[in-house]
Length: 386
Image (cartoon, rainbow, N blue to C red; front, side, top):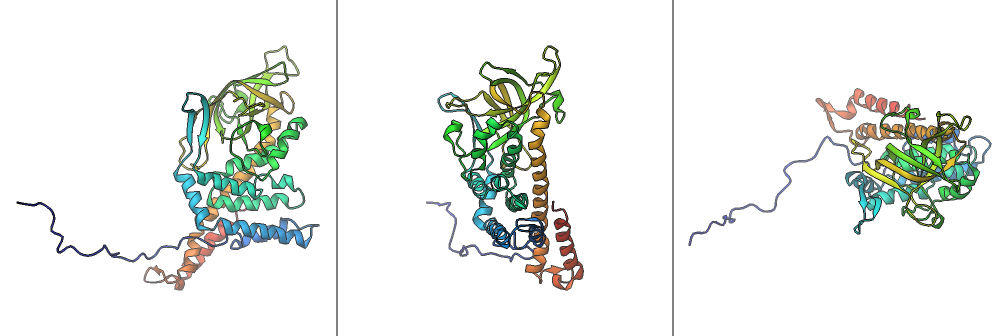
């Protein structure tokens, strides 16, 4: 009987590697991102805790905290979580299996581990929880360290940091929400805020027709008899829709001329879950399909008689929310500097770690241009630090 099975009698043994990997930098693992960053260390010494009227103990504690963060983000496990968070993007589930509208954003567990670490280190609100000279420098340095490895989660971390001064314009709201913002316990579950020890905040301003010109917003808010407001409209860009609550801009009547048709932007606190556990009408239409920053869920939302609480004065929404906007924009600068540093670090690192890598017809360590260029790139990255 004829068989068509292959003849394996002359087949070679197990596959062998037929080449060596050369001219590649080693993985940047277990390189402390704080102690190896001379410019950042010197900045913390100059402007961080203990730099002015502080004590040596405060300075020592600050450097110890940042050294721990620098070591953690350099571990293979942290970097693997950062990789998973970006390769396995968040998923929007509009309804549960029984047909109830839930607008749940599902993340890979790696993302929650990254978030939990940053919140646990106080990188969201430590400058408010422990105010004093250098507190914002300490918090910014830690934020920069984690952002070098995983930038996307910096969005909700930054917004939670930045919302505190805006909320303080309404002391009764700050009294309830601020202790939750200052907590270092990460709790991503959406439920009645009164039952939660901590909270994460987001922000929603931009609309399709206006873009950055929020004066063109059409979302409206009307007062309710219980002191709350009902918001109806859309937001073209809502950051971190999985958050517990948001600051949202909406048009109201002009408080100085309520009988006129003139609108005035006001700022509102809109929670995902209302007191008592009922879901607020906060409808996620879709998540943005972005080129980068993929671990971070950015969304488009619809509001339909969605309940909110006025923050600050009616008609003064922009001056109120700008407190939050300004601080998030500062964090954008810090995050950009973090990305630049991480992008160029393999170049000088490669020169130092692999001095015998080929460069033209010679060896890299014998090429002054290679050494100088590596240092030049590193220096330029250090020069953009905020």
